[in-house]
Length: 373
Image (cartoon, rainbow, N blue to C red; front, side, top):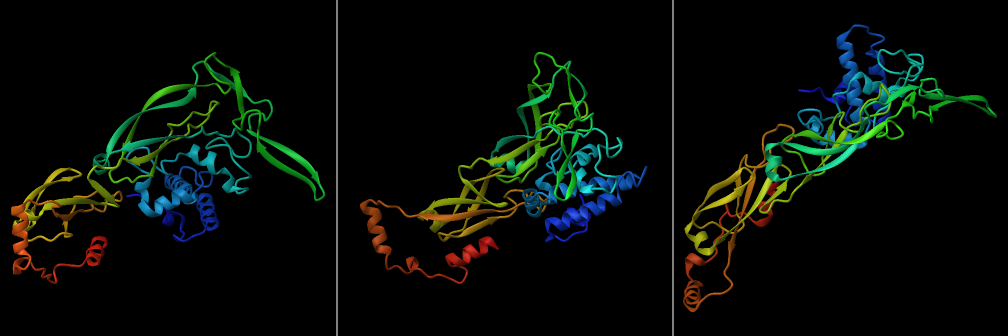
């Protein structure tokens, strides 16, 4: 089981963005590879801290993590705020370290303060529609994605403008004195490299668009609007040391014909006739795993809710499954023939047809309260 992100950084769940950033910087410096050469535990903690910061520093990711935990990202194979390697960390969070290691850095094992900057390719976003049955069981989807990859035969050379650093330094005279600022190099986009040889099928960055089939493992219990991530399946970055972007997968839930979802619970409206309500009956109804048969006792009242435990949607956090709530509705006929009408006229004052609610026959509001408890 993965460690809690808040515990990794040593902050409370109500911590502010500034407190989270400060805590991450402290942990990252403590476990930095340069301070702990050859220490695999320190390297692992360094990665975990970066993974926690990646999620908690993003308001949207943090909200989804608070609601669904690690399952909001993991998805059994490549999803997540996690799975970061050293290249990811150095390329994304280098500015967090400030001057702790001599100012900035260029990548793991490449020395700090003057090497090439690793550029990450752009992310791709797709929508995947899932039926309620697929959501209940989890599914593997194969989707076709058009992504940019480096063209065969392309080669790069050191950028003459920034000399491979990916940064350009500007000195400006102000009323406060000379001020020095650094910014990504416009000539190479911050990669430190420019194209040397470009094949005919490549664009100005040496990339071409290809169609690729990507396999996506989607865990059971996902909800509409949830976003999963397939690491490294976005667009590739130009240059020899770039990092591919990610494929972001937004979940769309297809509405079921008879079942309505509410969190992990499902609702089903069952309509029965007056004779069935009076005499009792056996009915086959829809469940997300197939058909199930339920028994209706004689004298069942309209509005009664039958709870089939564990027949709902599995919790994405692994806390079991929700329930299937069957709402019983007695269907009153609108037209009767003469014989049927005479029968009911005779029953109007019959004691067996006179309403006599018992304590077990709960009111509508009590049923709603029970349903949500």
